[in-house]
Image (cartoon, rainbow, N blue to C red):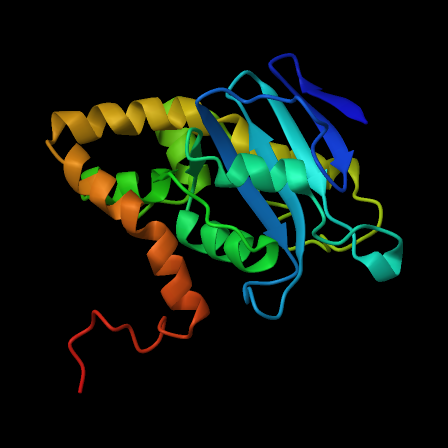
Length: 218
């Protein structure tokens, strides 16, 4: 099922898995929608992907008791675990954790626009995707559907448009942020942070988010 969002963007909704043979190039933008923010408790409902070409592919994962295939999505898993494809995310710590927990894979290699923004935009505390798109790209994205019911059997056009917007701009945003990392000589530091993300996600899943083993506490 395909939708035209704007003259510069469109989306295709896939039920259960990506179609075989679909390619995203060397870097794919990735985001997720879940029933909540606890990867152990809350179901993974939607995975959004884009090659940075103005098209988003959304994979809706439907539980078996609702007539779906659950997390039986071999094509999606293969893409997310492919060491030859960089997964570009915003706040990758959460997305990597939920994908690794729910799909049983290691998501790597990863880049995170939120980490990059925090490393180079130290003059502000506004590192959300909406703020970055507005300030670096001149693009306004809506967060109106952020807290809607992503477990619904049929997602609304508004939900799909919102979900797609979270990946359609990540490649352009990454170009801006990578240039700033190079300018401020923090690219290697950023890379070390990205490399650590799969392990950071495993620590979170094991309950080491709080207390943080890196904190100075008794």
